[in-house]
Length: 202
Image (cartoon, rainbow, N blue to C red; front, side):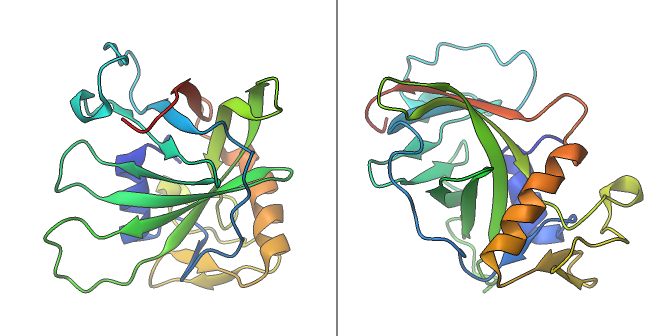
């Protein structure tokens, strides 16, 4: 499975790609898991730019998730027409980020919004115990098939949708267990790494 940047997240929602998805988030949002403010996620290697600039001026090689004090947030594409995602952060082992797709501006396809899941861990904390850096990986249905296709061995409790090339569950603990197991199928380059940059939302 390739590293999960914003563009890949959109592809996962469209194509399935062995991801666990649900019609709506399974967990309530937790506050205090991630430090509120602007975060940086590099979606390509050697993404070099001045991240002190407003996020509207960032290049497409990086995404800027914005986390609010209540634990919710949003990450948007590099332009107005790109897909964006509402985020909900959930504490636990592993921590979870629920990403619900928001249709791109002008999208009249009528496609139903879905939520996909990232699991991960904090790698640094501030004095209040809030994460200031995290590693995240996609929550998958089971060991990926050839070419990152839908697994042939779904994890316990997950129901496959072969047409959508994805799976689902309505059981929060099944999903969290899948998140824990999915670390083994992280991209060879490692998990997606995010770090806190600054207060605010721009």
